[in-house]
Image (cartoon, rainbow, N blue to C red; front, side, top):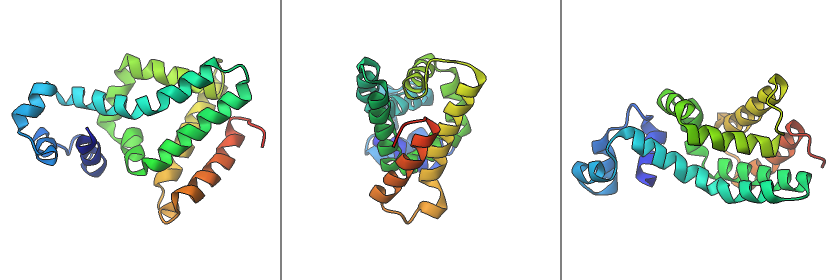
Length: 172
């Protein structure tokens, strides 16, 4: 799936064919079809692979008694993964095929609701929704922005954490 992830990041979902994925994996197109019947199934697998990396941190945050500490842990992990996967963040947040697909994919929506509830709160009011969108947009835009492309990961991670903590009202 890493091959598909890299191709999606480089060419977008629409610009990536099953043949390209097969070639990158060093297998036949039939082998790809054997495992994934459609490109949508590949999108699900790639997305689930990315989100699984947050699952443990989300579960820890949901189980924690100390809410600010849980939010801090989760925010750290979200930023760590966004910085680590700079090339993929843009695809996940701006590729029209992925956006449409994930907007309709119930497990992804449920995961996002849990994630933002742990980071921001359970209130589904307009202010909380805007805050969640701003947090997602701020992190996603920052890690892929040309102004920070030259920054090393620890520097970018440190500044992102400091600034996003303000968006989720975490103390310093």
